[in-house]
Length: 285
Image (cartoon, rainbow, N blue to C red):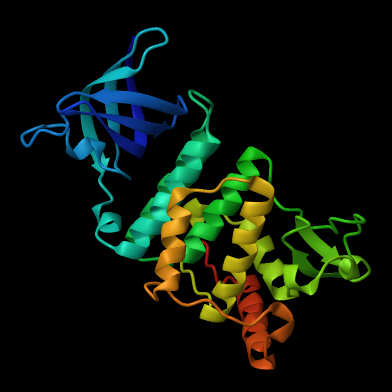
């Protein structure tokens, strides 16, 4: 059967001496694998179509229960800007690996396709890689049914007097239940408010993104802890991002534990939360 689909390359691997197998996240057929013959040859006309993050229209033949064989491709957006920057490439690799692990073959993935495409376009436009990645993590968790509970207490269910976000518990925590969790695994109320903004923000409508470095450190700790605890997917690219942080190739982590943060840091996080509610993450009309 002949297929013509719009897709984003989320994985590319060598096959034999001159071929490649690419995995596409498509708008209409979910995740699909395609064999590209001769893609490793110098004069191959399909070499560019096998590059990671490439968005294009792919035409391939696929038999029953077989992998597809590429006939032609029209590249709509190469996203080469991402591959030219270390930080952007690292975070984008993490995002496409998450999609590859989350989607099954031919599972309906139209929503994830749209969010991934908007995410890659945002990185090309120079938006903050870390914040965009946290937004994408939230969208993926919502799509697969493992999103954190942000509007009511994860322990007792009350929706008032929410005071913090407990990433090990999996959601918001009220003032009464806060004592059930160690303060090491709790984040301030402003972080909870920012996560609520993330949950209601569509990546296709994200405009300007401005978050202070101190707030980004809190967000990294919360989202990484939540993903490790409740999603249980450990991506290879996560280790590379951690190595960047270790060798100061990315912004360093804040060493203080939540209970040891200074008043200055707390005020900066509070300011970020207020800005967020005033469209600090601006949505294009």
